[in-house]
Image (cartoon, rainbow, N blue to C red):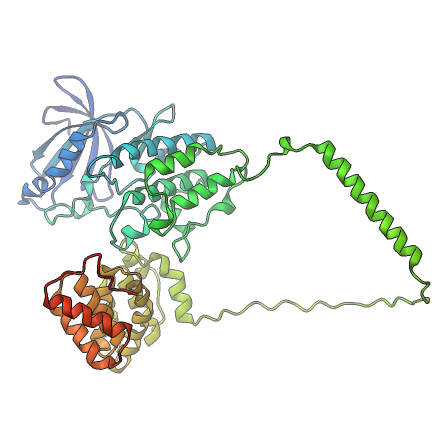
Length: 489
């Protein structure tokens, strides 16, 4: 291919694995300006151009952005098998092509990225990039960062090639995105922090998720030396699993980072140069003299003792026995895979591992799928059990999914509770949480059905029954579950 529309192709810059998106370096035939052309291909020959028009608003947002470190949007047009988007060319390689940086370079690059995000987050409405990672960050010779790929390749439309559907990158995606929860300004901060961790620990992007434990906490401090503890704490705050524990926005994160000397001494530790070593020496000498005086007096006052014979005793050390795990094989398996029970990794993770084929093991496997939102796959493996064993698998799913409901994640909790009720119809707490989730999601028929059944079975007068009755009353009056009505304890 030598030419696309009014642009002369110079060379291919890259493509995704399946070829649904290809990037070219090109030159405008009229202006001779170098540009980047991203070509998106449709999956079917008779695909509709409407798939592009649906996302015209996203292109309009790119048109409105006028930031020196975001490649400018120029043009878009239809092709025979898809469409193309034309953007400004920046003569700078991506972070993914470099393998080593000094701590100071990493700090400067991170500052540069945050400066871009400050601009994006101050807009109305704020712009959330959603896919910040080394591959989408260009860096010039002066360590100025440029942010690219604002999500057009993530179009979720049946007319588009599945290869163009990108849901983010494991390791760089915040937990709230993994579990399809609402994103905030702090969501992009997680990805920036993860990128900085990848750079400073020299961890390849494809292996970054190996630094995340079962509780979605990054474990990386042990890989660093000579780095200011304040910077390590700053990174931990950036990648905190809970949104509320991160910086609220890029402006706050930037201010915190600029105050840190990345290879210096923590602001909470007194530097050695500020200590008067002569005073310390004098103090130590005085203390030592006092101690020796006390010892001399004690010896002088001690009565003579009888002659004692010291008998040598041989101590035989008992070999330390390895600590046995209190976890069952099923629990050990679930612990090993839990961090990958998310929408991005679950299918591959489950394909590459073998769960225990017991009723409890099936329950944990179903729980993994359920946490990732793949209720269909969770249901499928439970159905493979004999009918009388299915309820035991459902019990495991309920125990794993219950905290999701307690946390107020109704969008995720509702389908999980519905799955439990499919095999354990009289689980009153599943009925309660399923009903409340349906109410919050405006599915009144399902909410009424679950909550009325909950009241029939539970037969107590307490917090739960009061909340259920209140929800039913509000639905009768067509009052939605707004912020004034807390549905969870």
